[in-house]
Amino acid sequence: MTERDVLIIGGGPAGLSGALTLARARRSVTVVDAGEPRNAGVDHMHGFLTRDGMPPGRLLETGRTEVRGYGGEIVEGTVARAEEGAEEGAGEGFVLTLGDGTRLRGRRLLVTTGVTDVLPDVPGLRERWGREAQMCPYCHGWEVRDQRIAVLGTSPNSVHQALLLRQWSPDVSFVPVLGDDAPPAGEDAARLAARGITVAPSGVRRVVVEDDRLTGLELADGSVLGCDAVFLAPTWVPRAGPLTDLGCETGEDGFVTTDPTGRTSVPGVWAAGNVVVPFGQVVMAAAAGATAGAMINADLVEEEVARALR
Image (cartoon, rainbow, N blue to C red):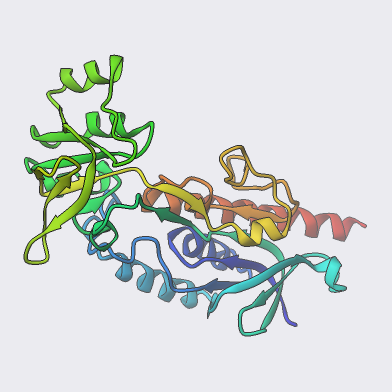
């Protein structure tokens, strides 16, 4: 196996940004990407300075071209197993076994595998995800300004999400999910009322679609709440297989623990992007990848200096 300076698992904004930083630092870099971006169903991304409104696929295509332009390698595939090199008799560093059996070895490892959004069991919701059903007000609030917005009460943060969305539209409704259809009470109810946000009388049963467009939510009492957009907080499940393989420390929320540069508890392993911060926007993931890339290069420099002194 040819040893790379850095192996990167995940070719989204974080992984490609890290690869670009490292390749420009004249490091040998291989990015392994499964081609399953989190925002694949979204037509345009927003809030990324100079890239506002760009299709996500174009950003990734441009990023791959830039990384390759500095000698970086992009490999399509999935990682079946990640191991420390010493355990494989390959010296220090890390060994990745891909789904097709290919094995890669690197001195450092950056994991940017992202997160899976698990949606509530509401019929029709998954099909609208990334279209009329969204998560981030800052990413998609402008596009539904002054329209009818419904917020599903899927999380302790859902009331906060509804309060935020009132900034974009005067017509915001809070809708409990079926099976947990108790309406907000106490301070939460008062806060929603203070922002002019109505609360649906019962939980949501299904999504109503007409002519391939979301037009409302059918509630448990049989009534239909008309709306043009739905926002919710999904359950986030990190795609942390490689980090788990290597024994990286995780927090109570199940996400890997890192320092501000992305360094994990396992020496030589960094993580960046949504696998660390699931609510991070594209621009935040790219910044985290660049930071991790710079710190990995600095770490390699220190190792090389120490080796020379010995």
